[in-house]
Length: 329
Ligand code: ATR
Image (cartoon, rainbow, N blue to C red; front, side, top):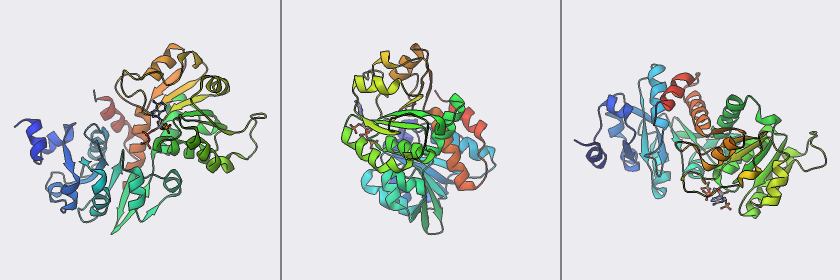
């Protein structure tokens, strides 16, 4: 039977196939109806990622590798959850015997609404990417920001706290989560760039209190909002260390440049949260300019490792997870 037919019928697959498969997708109804299909797998699936779309998610590959390496007899699956079924799917997790779930686009805000309790960072960023089932209750965490901090340290050997950051796309969910993390780290300086300037201005006002302490940046505001405007970008990038792309621009090879390549100088570090195969336009331009650059795979890896640590209260097998991620096309 072809993989395609299996997907349509959603037959449980042999565990070795499940572990290797990049396209096996279960549905919200599989959870809402009690989760028998997950219990019948070998090993039983007790973790998963909710998303729409979700077939592209790399999370099962490195989480299943981590579970095997840690000797934990359970599997991690993709679950396609349409917006209208999100709340029911979250609330079905305890009865379906799940330990928790990861959450991706577009459900991170819905996950915050679904959980009974959330940690400070999840509440402030308005999004949850890690759900823990605790008896009948759901607890929410967000490991995206802490995952970014670890990725920046690993890729560039520096701490976010010490950097002057220019954040592209501060108006979206990912941008907000990163801006809140920068505020919690009290990074040296934060420039919020957004096409719709009002959104960046509102976020600047909300985060301003975190940037009132003394840092040696001279007579400039430590947090500022600007539009995608060449002169404004030129000025800010001349006084920046790290540029982060939190927009989805660059996912497609045909996307236009997010910022003019001439503005990228060799002293900059450029981090693109996009992790589509190959280099995004922004990273190509950054590499061409001699700047240090990295894509979002590190953030993906570290947010996953942090989720594992939350679920199991033990260190994640990071190198196993990294290798599993690297083995993907
Ligand atoms: P979300 O993350 O909440 O789903 P989104 O609509 O995907 O939001 O947008 C994410 C971010 O990418 C936003 O900051 C958005 O800018 P606006 O707030 O002005 O909409 C930004 N964005 C999307 N497309 C863009 C483009 N072509 N150029 C610049 N910024 C863009």
